Length: 262
Image 1 (cartoon, rainbow, N blue to C red):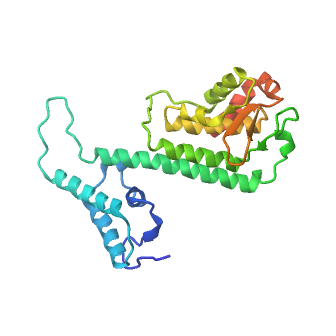
Image 2 (tube, rainbow, N blue to C red):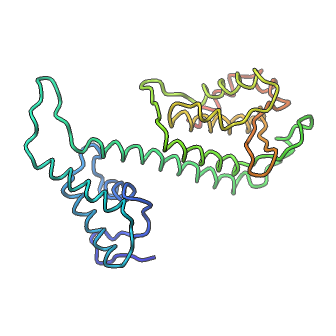
Image 3 (tube, rainbow, N blue to C red):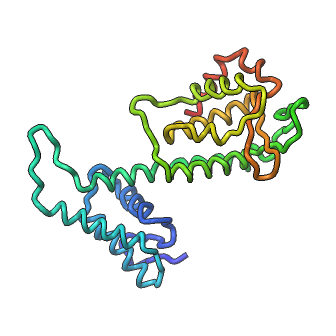
């Protein structure tokens, strides 16, 4: 790795996937309030990073240059006198749009980190499970789905979610318990295996996606459902395990256990 030792920031230039990653790192490492970003300081450090990259002949791409222009534009607006507003109204903060983009980007980074941790769990805990406990002798033939398959599918769903409008309803945080009940009702309404992907795509926000993913993991762990594929890399299907009714006959302990993920 190339390290810019001459920089006061001492950053590794190739570690950032985009300009938002760089900005978040600058903000978090200096313990800056993301809602009150000192644009002059952050802009200076961001431009220093670009100068180091140019000195080392590292091509960062146009998105880094565009963000530099955005930061300079915000800085210039902050230097101008604030526009007059009506009584009772708050003056517009030129940093607001950037702050919202950074917060949304951080949500996806946290979700990706969660997926990475789940993959680590698979390699350390789920790599050699007693698969017989998860298979139903009466089920139709198919390929058993591993945790890695589910994580990979969920990552693809998250990637698509970045490019579609996401509706977040304030004050209505969905829980893992609610998602377990949702899956239970969906499965009770059908005797056939159901594709998992449409269930995720019906979720209105990022929290809904994550809690539904955790609910699926919980139901697999409790042997209430089976996950299958008809072919390698095919759509993941979810269906009732032969123990489905037995598991939900003791519903309250299941919901309590699931909350440990929330």
